[in-house]
Amino acid sequence: MDLWIRLVTLLIVAFILFFAAATAFAYLTLFERRLLARLQNRVGPNRAGPGGFLQPLADAVKLFFKEEIVPAQADRAVYVLAPALAMIPAVLLFAVIPFGAYLDLSFVLGEQASVVPLQFTDLNVGILFLIAVTSIGVYGITLGGWSSNNKYSMMGGIRSAAQLISYELALGLSILVAVMLTSQPATTPAGAYPSCELMWGRPAEAFSALSTCRIVESQAGWWNIFKPTGFFAFCVFWLASTAEVVRAPFDLVEAEQELVGGYNTEYSSMKFALFFMAEYMKLIAISAIGVTLFLGGWRGPGVDMLYAAGYPNLGALASLGYFLLKLVFFLFLSVWVRATLPRFKYNQLMDLGWKPLLPISLALVAITAVGAVITTQTGVLPGLFGAVR
Amino acid sequence: MLDLIKGMRTTVKYLFQRPVTITYPEVKRPVRKRFRGKHELKRYADGKERCIGCSLCAAACPADAIYVEPAPVDPDNPQGYGERYAAKYEINMLRCIYCGYCEDACPTNAIVLEHEYELSFYDRKSAVFTKEMLLVPPDKGHGEPPPILQQLNRPPNPPAQMEL
Image (cartoon, rainbow over all chains, first blue to last red):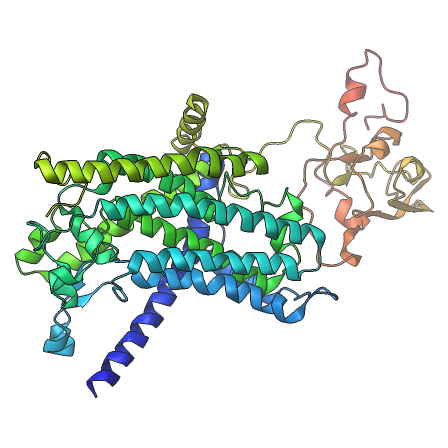
């Protein structure tokens, strides 16, 4: 019986998370268009509803009513499957991201719900899961380009696949630096209240450095971006994640001016909407991952004080607020770069992924490892490179 | 690298400036004096129509948008000062290219392109503007010579100079 309740709870949380992600996507489009416009000295959409607030709804209705055109010679099964294949990994990424600390719902659901973490689940291999799911996202784009039976779409799909798998390397290595900077103490570090042990019920040693909850917990002292290798790893992560999400200035494969629109040329109405949604959701998810890994997740001044003082729900609100603030900052950065920089040429793009980024990220991993060993063995500045024991 | 930072600084500067967009329809940009918008059939100061139904405007129109059906004036109650007037005068606004040739061709300065540009319609039939829609009310719209003729240092040819 207890198992059924847990299953139903998980399903409900999954639905809530999915709808939150979909709403976040919808209003990200509006946020981006308004911000892009203001950065370009003009006003964005402000007619549909007060301040343009119903613009995403108008876009959704328009896309819904558009005519669905399927090319005659297209491989039908793959053509229909590709947008779904792009969308599913994008949504799956939200499963291990910690949006906040924990809620206390014991006043409505009883004693069992006194600690409800604001995270769908915490896998012990959370980061590995995230990288793996990001890699699966390549399939949807490639198959979409190939199944359209259009040589330009196919070229767009192939180029996009090459771009994504090239930047996955730098992305994975920069994430590895953040994982290495996650200290592994025998007990919960001081000031890391609320701890993962409290939220998930496993002993502190059972959390590996790949678990997202642990990564946020270990940034209780300094966020990873303030540590020396952490800052450069953040820069590499930001570059690699922008290329991974196919976002300006790396959006050659899907920009309208290039190859007519790349892999989504032949897609209309809902299928195009799914590709579009997948792209923006990946952007939000990877920004959230960046916040978790480098900017301290939901950590901020006052969160642990609120929890220690006995106001868990206020603390949850504060932690969620900090997380969203950092996420919006990341997204602002992304839109700002899109408004300013011109697009990379394809050879410049591939050049950047392999020639500078890969050696730099390898070097960062090496420096972090050596620094971790030195600081731990000598006891000087422990925690600067992680691995405190 | 430095250029990238300079570029980013420029865009963020725009974020804190007022956008240059003119928020139509709350704010309408003022049009110039010789702006060519909707046509108007002007009258003389005493209320008689200027149009004499000569169809020179229809002949001049490159888009063939004007249709004129002249008729003799009613002797007891003349509409205008000539021998004939335009009984039917229609301009198809979808065909019109707003070039102003009809305004240049008119000998009495009857047809003038005014400043109105908000001319939407829901079907093709209502794009054909009739004389009632174009003719100004009797107490308004005294058509002076067009600005180009005002620049000449000689009086315009008759009958445009008839200020009756």
